[in-house]
Image (cartoon, rainbow, N blue to C red; front, top):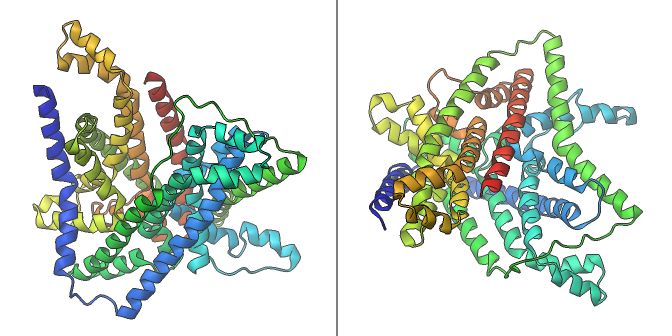
Length: 520
């Protein structure tokens, strides 16, 4: 390894040790110190664990079935407009679950869109959007695009020769999917189930707004209004153990990946008859209607009605500015930290794997637990760290740095090493090669990673709720606080602003990702 390479690796080790390790150490130490803290009764603990796992199970099953079906329809059939459907189905991926929780409350509440549709049939009241069913519906809407994206990517990589062989042997399309395609997706489905489960058990905003008791809601209740954080950390330890069990379970279920053909041909889509095309279009239409059209229409209707009746939206513009400012700082700082980490992680060896893997550990843990750990660190540190922009920005970096590292690392690994050898053979030093060759080929990926961090920071709720500077509200905090106080007009306005901010961010990220792929 050259001298610049050693310096980069040393800097990456230092950054990972300074950012990602301290919250993990605090969680372990505080959980040990709070092992005998009076938190909840054993019966209540079992109830919380059961509620959390039941919600995760229902969301995983529902989103896996729907997401796999949408991926198969858009990737392996002749459904008209399947490329457009593939994009539209993935739109909810860019919106946080708590926005859908607000929309769901409006859809079936008094005067809601769904309630109005059912009024001619004599149904003027629906069950309130609270409890298990509401949390399951809300989190399933957000999780379907995750499964859809992972399965669609895996389908594009599968060798179509096995499908064609099964068809030549007389298997019908449904049998081919059941006996040939789905077994090859076992690893992807296990990964999707793990990602969705971790998302569900770490969700705080949606379950709180929909009044469904899970661990995150109980942890926040233990934290709120208390000086002693030991009870909250004792519950955090249980939640972290659940997350660790899910990750281990995913590795076991995933098993050994099947080999993919080096030059796999594009698969031949399954032709659909008129009935199949109609059924597929209706299914995808219902998915998009429930996940995008109705929620956005409800927020817009609720906002228009509230403003027409004289409701005051509150300082949402100032909160939007705060959210954008915090997210911009997070994107700049996190990307700057991610570049040396990605440069060090692109090498082979145990140290490189540790540099890449440790930040993913903190990213996978519930953000509420990570936020509490950083809160403890900020209280123990100098006074100016507590509830400051600096602490919030560093907390975003701790949680989201793997997103930027991943985007940059993919671009680095796709650089043809012969380009670097040519540069060195022309007499350029390692530093000069990095500036003249590596930087131009990776700058789009760096931008894509920065946009991804910006996007995640705008939507972040639990970390922002715990660590934001005093008096500095954001749109996410406004949505959560307004729902808690029953101010649904204010909540819908703030949620609609989040939607309006998300669409151009999504377009910018897609454009940066596409250009990064072209550059690679």
